[in-house]
Length: 188
Length: 188
DNA sequence: TCCTTCTATGCAACTCGTTGCATAGACAAG
DNA sequence: CTTGTCTATGCAACGAGTTGCATAGAAGGA
Image (cartoon, rainbow over all chains, first blue to last red):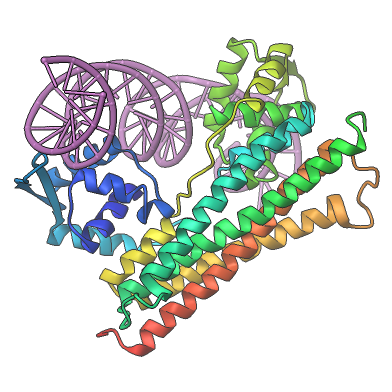
């Protein structure tokens, strides 16, 4: 049900269409939650049926019409209820860690390229986050009088930055370990 | 399909029953992959049907009989094939981050207890990982001549430790932000 | 004119994962 | 001898999420 709440938060921050939501889930919200457009459209339909959202047809020039969604009173109440209900701390799901342990039963050196590719992806994400932070929060162009919403968006972004930095450092550790095992000889 | 591979790795490290696997998924493997026993039993059944695993009935004293699973040649080959195929870097799924952004539309101070509870969970996990590291890798009782499998298990554990440390530091940041918003006044 | 790209929405089928329930052997405590 | 706990396995139903496919308006380029 967490996608519902992510959609409520995103639409409270700014109403928008399913397509726009899907793009936000590739950007800011996507730092900590992902969803495909199919998933989003289906959930939007259900939430409208449940009275949590309102739809409005919007005609556009130069592009197809869209449906703009916004949060209703009951939608806001549903979000508030969820906010006050404790949730379980997350558990990790990390494919790459499974691969690393699995490498013991194959050639560890064969994983080096894969790990380097992942590290590059995380470097790219970090650069993207840092650019966003400069643009929206810490740069000279950033809006000065930060309200609560901005402060909270910023602290979540700092979490994303910390996560990417930690991951890059760990992947460096992994690479060093794989190189060490490689030069030490596969027969060890 | 990643649960399949996590099971293959775990069974290569040591054959065992569905019940034992379920407990490993609460411990070492569970650092980076979770699964319920129902999920595990279902996948085990499918993997046996596909010829990736072998079952063996084992009689036990003092407890019910069990089925011990081990990896076949095709199972090992399936794991090797997966290891050589690139995978997409993970995307985060973090409920708590959604809550933090959502707090802008509710009372941010009401989240403080929840965040502190999460921080405590992560502190506990960190302590658990550190104890495991001391026991299995860095302590005086740890086996000295580390083979590749041990090195790889250790680097994955170091990843878990780094993740928990990063998360605790971030939650401290979140708490400081929530306190700041609280004393600055909710009307800002 | 056709092809591609971007915006925009959606169905159908499938797999993955969770929740609730059920069974059963062995042992220990009351 | 009943109750509770731990070991051990499993079904049924549901919800969450992915993949593939399909449609369509608008713009720009070959």
